[in-house]
Length: 278
Image (cartoon, rainbow, N blue to C red; front, side, top):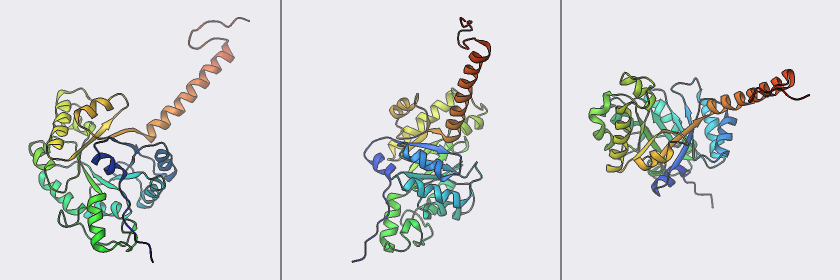
């Protein structure tokens, strides 16, 4: 008998539904090999960006395939555009779409409508792409599985939606609310001041409201801050970025080479500034 196809389950959702923590890392580079290296490193998810980065759809599709080869999810942060920009990553079998700068309850409702099938939304139906196993998943099963195994992430990065924040988070069909402190700091007139009280208050409030309404809370963090964020209620944490990793790696190499060069040329220990005995 022909094989019965089902949608690839989400590694992130499986962990979150068990009450565990899922970790992602951000990719600015559009190369599939960078995505595969990140996936091989043990992250639950890679987050590739189309808001700030000039990646094209073919590059993103290859990154999704590279992550899938290692059982790792892909989140695509989209550029704000038409409904097609929200749907296309899902149809390429990305696990989630991240939508930046949600500005109001109305804005959030529009995103949910475009990213969820009936009865949660009215996402346009195809099924003939990678997520639907190219029409090899029965339509009713495809719609049900997509609503269950694919998710949307709505970003709070501005002061404008704060008055409607609870209504946004309580919205049926919203899966994850994600706090972006960088843009938020600019929005409150304190760019880059990550210790600003309103950033801390908003971060805490988002986690509390997500827990209250049975939604997942996500944000950016670090190895130093992850435990604090988990204690606060965050279960999806993005740590690090490919461009940062490469920059640090290459800078460290050059720094070590310069130290060795100083010893060789001047007979001086770079760290102690002492003459080497002949």
